[in-house]
Amino acid sequence: VVPVSLVPIILAAFSCAYLGTASGQMLILAELDYNYVSIIAAFFVVFYMYGLRAWHREKIQMQERVLGFKVRDCICAVESDRSVVYANIAALVKAFGLAAPTASPETALDAFDALVRRELP
Image (cartoon, rainbow, N blue to C red):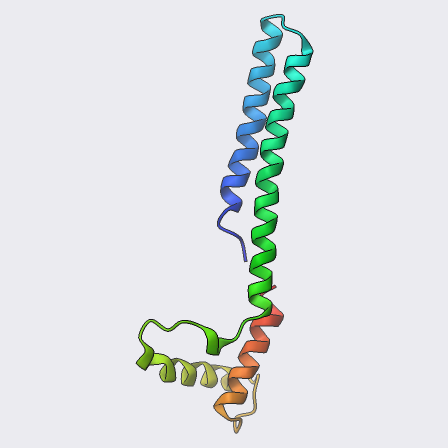
């Protein structure tokens, strides 16, 4: 599972690197003190680290949601379709051999929950 925020963080990292290099070159060309370059570089590093921290928090939250996954707690857009969705999941689980062919739908749904918790994190 790849978080949606990963792409902006990568773009931000490249932007920070580019802007840090460009601003450093401008300061050097303007013959300013290297302390200014260090301050600007520190700003970009802090900005990048903040983005990585946010990405890591999102990743941990996603893992926690997956570890507590229960198909019975999922939202169904059309509530009357819930029984059809459960029956299809149970048939799929039985077809792949994750539950016995004679298993009850509840047992098959439990096997599906275990599959999601095991494979997705």
